[in-house]
Length: 172
Image (cartoon, rainbow, N blue to C red; front, side):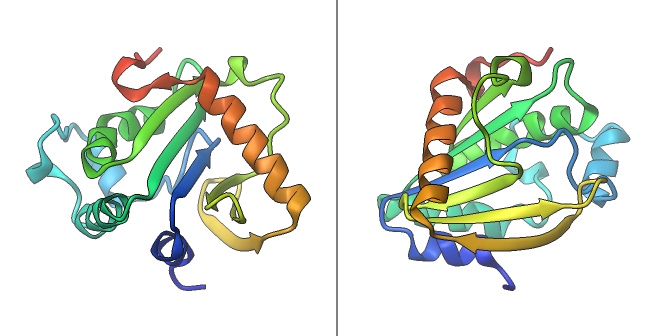
């Protein structure tokens, strides 16, 4: 499974949803270290990390095919520095065509949620991503059982309905 998210987006016909629930990812990322040292993106695409070009191109191409990409982030408040970093960079997700919303964890307490982050494509297949305790990707798993798809779909829609659009979400 070299690039399963890219594979899922390439095969998607109408929808891709991404649910993120961690407060820290890849803490040793050099780009995150640059940001912690004071680098800011300032809604300027020329300041984006090198890896962004390929992702942004993929999202743009996917949304041009008519696939709606929605990303929902459940976050603790006050937010971690890593979430501040993600928030600072999210303008690029939106510019590429993603719809992004944020939900404070306290507003998600009564939503039955899967135990890990995920992508779901066309409401039919789910890609779970399992992380180590520090936020590194440890493994991924595709699931297509109807009960799993139903849980993920229900959870994502509940989160999406309660979440605040990126443009309106103010960091706490």
